[in-house]
Every structure is written in C-alpha cells, then in structure tokens.
Length: 390
Image 1 (tube, helix red, strand yellow):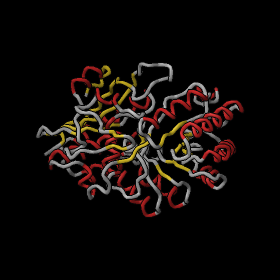
Image 2 (cartoon, helix red, strand yellow):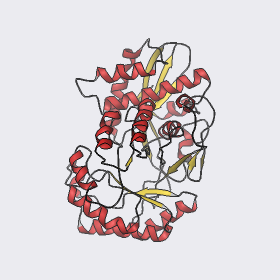
Image 3 (cartoon, helix red, strand yellow):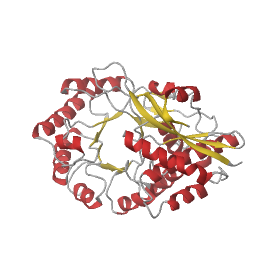
Image 4 (cartoon, helix red, strand yellow):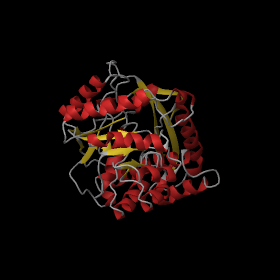
C-alpha cells in the first residue's frame, strides 16, 4: 500500500459552542481536516484546526506541499514518516505550522492503520486501561456575574463534573492590535474574581473549576490573579504567562498556591521536557492536532508518567481533535481529562457519520476501526472554502 495524496480541507462549519450567551444560533467557524489517500482505496482523516484564519491557511499550504513529498510512502510506516517530515523542517523551524501539519497527517495514518487491521487506534497502544475517557467542558460565556453562575450550574445539571473558564473580560484594549501588555484593568481583574466566586457558590464544593489565562499576563499580574482565586478552590491555573519564557513560568509557579497547567502551545516532547524536568507545571495539556499527532501525544504522556504529572489534552476545534486525543488517553494511566467545548457535542454531528458518544462527563469509544467514525465527504464538499476542497 502506498500514499497517493495528502490533501487539506478548509471547511466552514458549525461552531461547537455559542458565540455569546444571548445568541441562540451557533455561528460558523473554520476547521482544517487532512485526508490521506492510498492506492488501495483506504483513506485516513486527521485534523489541524487552528485558532485564526491566517494560521489555518498557512498550515493548509504546508500540508499541500507535503503531498508530493510523501507520495509513494507506505502509510503504515508511521514513525518513519513522522521523522521524515519533522527533519525536513529543521533549518526553518521544526515547531509550529510544521508540527501541526505532522499532527494531521499522523492522525490520518493511524486511522488508515486501524482500518487496514480492523482495530480501533487504542488497541495499538496496549489497549484501554479504563472503560471511558473523562472530559471537562466550558460553560457558555456570560456577560454578567449572574449569567456566568447560571451557565456553570447548567452544565453541572447536564452531568458534567469539571469545567474551564476564562473570567477576565474585557481584555486589554491593545491586544486587539496584536500587542501583549500582560496587564488588565482593575475593573477586569475584580470582575473575574467575582465571576469565579459566584460560580463556586452556584456549583458547590465538589465541582472542579479550571481557570484559563490564555498565556497573556505578565508575571506580577499572573501571580496576583492566581492568589486572588485561591480561596475558591480552583483546580488549575492554565497558561498564566506567554509560552515563550520558561523563566517567567518558573517565577509564577514558585509564587502561587494553586496548581499550574501548561502545554497547548508547546510542540513535541522536546518542548515539554524542560517543563517536566524543571517542575514547572502540575498538569500538562498538549494538543494532539498541534504537538505532533497521536504518535507524539503517547510519547509525551509516557514522559509525564515518569514524573507523576497528569496529562489532559487540549481541544479547541472539531470531532477528530476530541476523539484522537481520547484514543490515546484511554490507554494512559496518568490521564486527567480530555477537553471538550460544551456539555453537548451535537454541533459535531454535521461532520461525522454518527455522533460522539458523550455520556455525562465521559466519552465512550467504540470498537470500530481507526478513529471509529468517517467524515461526511458530501458535507465537506458542500462547505469547503474555494480552493480547499481536498
């Protein structure tokens, strides 16, 4: 069996969460799926969805150029292909867009391998160590403290036991122009603390509340915010400072009394090694569609296991992101939870041949081969952006 084509699909599809709490109709967002075709008619699917339109188009371009590079390769030689792609970018930067491209292709190759052998991907990693994969989700964004508390209570009533929220709005005005000051207004800081206090009161003491800082604060701001939230028993404080400085992360870690989580913007095991060796985080959260795919996620999880650090894959995109992460995490002893968007994942139904099996706060994987579902090619073709239809 040989690879004949690697193609990106850039799709406009339903957002898995509401744009605002007051909006009852989910708006669309862009998704990037990767299709790997073979000369025997077996096709694999991956995903590389980014957070901006520019990033999506950049990674599509990289994937498109890799098609001829991989033509004729045996798709079951996954480790060889991973390294072949990774090393070809050494002189221009082996992290970022290049690693995202590797991720989507790698996931698709594992999908192919599962289909060839009639097995779900998790069977290639030693089989499951648990019946299902626990998840956490996000409440709808609340414009007021009261609405935020209501949305938190609603997802708990839907059966979720953990949720994540970024409570600090508005962001600093200069961020709109791409400049990161690292600060917030006093009003925004106080609003965020009030939101978390109200959420904790609404859901009680047993629900895990995770805080996302989106890597945008300077060191003193991050320390001040973490300490302000400590009385509300937050489960983790995520990406308190920009990802570029391990020194800044170390300073925050040593100055706060809450657990730290990092990793959605770290690429490959080499980026995670300083975090683990330096004791810079209590949780790590690599994204399977950005950090290097299924192959790399399993390696990172094993590294973290040696340090007794839980791993909790990030998910900011579509159904393959969730399920690819879950396929690995069901085999991982040191897994915490897989991130999902909302308490219901029904928005993904448009893309796939059957819904994600989400029950309460856990995803259940089937014994179907590969990822366990197929993307709806007709839907993709009807919603592909011009020039990006595979």
